[in-house]
Length: 330
Length: 296
Image 1 (cartoon, rainbow over the protein chains, first blue to last red):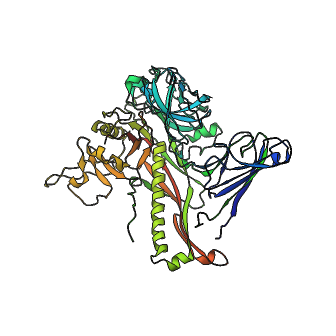
Image 2: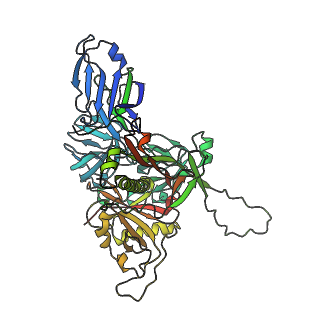
Image 3: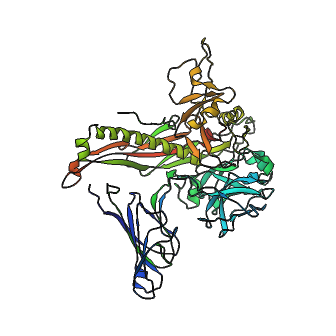
């Protein structure tokens, strides 16, 4: 039972220059990371050892690095946001609201949102807009974004059927850090093609696979295509944000993204139903892909980079993590 | 010992409970053959056989997962504390397990139940606060999909201030909505039911064909409305709309290890729980999430 300073897990990975996630369900109190490649090299300013302990500021930690182009060593605190982040993905609360500025959100099928603060945003991040004056129909949706220009703007990644009718003149955005913990999940729809087969575009990546059965919910006539409301479909092809269905929508009313004056409304959505095993078998895909399961995890996010614990591309990185009794009277 | 702030656990009320057979793998598959079309046209006298219809089956899969929580108690704690720490902690662990089960069920419903926004209110948000028309829309959606009501009617009685209660679907939500629900036209408080037998403490009241159950750990999506307010998820469900599954020969475990198991000096005891759990919606047409914001 004694767990003082007990190493509970270890591992290694080859860095790709991006952030690296380590799942540690047993939870940890400390983690050490060794960048073997940089320990051996003599690269000026490159980190090779990192340490984080519970109680340290999230996103920071300690850093050992080469202060010159040789094997000398210096130690420092990792810069804010550049080190270790403790992750519990069952915590799905969004970040604080950040005000929009400048041109706010443009009236386009992929609105560009202006803000002086893009901290934590990257391509693939999910944001939720609120209080979008004059473009009210944009508020309350979760949108995946791309084209992040630091402290200037970002863009909605997946095109809506039409522009929302007006540019926003005020508003806020929040970063939504995680999905609901259970898969598969419902997703909001921003476009459905008036075609055979109908292709659905979701506002964020949907995660569905070929063979899954879905239901389309479109109870509000402000989005057009009311004929599709309640229909069940089988997924026949997917991209990250589109779902090709077995529905012929060519004779349906056109889909339309709702305009500002139509608020309040119910957003159209796609809802998971189950699996069409026959389609999954003929498509040679996992016939249990629809299985409901809990995706939540506990672990550490290691930031990449020259002085980040996840290192640079092709660095060989080793780590150990442990548990210890903590917060005893001192 | 004093009572703890134990919440009402409401999200399993309408669930089907199933057991996953031992040695049956990680996944449980349930299947449904969908209704076949009717055949209102006479066969005629040509002797030619009409075409067959194709049956349609949908498979619902769920993956079994395991959960646990434990506490370590130093031997000096159980030796010197005047209160029965081990007993108290054990009791709390039991509540922890049931709360986990409830939370997982709640989050499963929030992740995958189809939704309707309340739009009948006047608070200027999207969704709006809940109104009688929103309750009617929710009821009608389930009724039109042939969902069976969970609660049977309560006949009227010759008692002052009471009202008969219709066959109802269950509506499970956060207790923050109590005042908003109470202000919906036609609301009948649980205390006004003609019969008080078998009414749970969490039952708040009835609107039309919905009986509302509230809990301090109801489902809330933070800052998700058009105005940036919290959105409250009201799960309106009929019978057999979702199921909870446990593993045969596993279920819920209470685990106590006396200090002798802790090491050479037998310093620490541990007590904990483990459980198997899986949940899924079995018919998406029979449960929906009525999303609302607050007015009060």
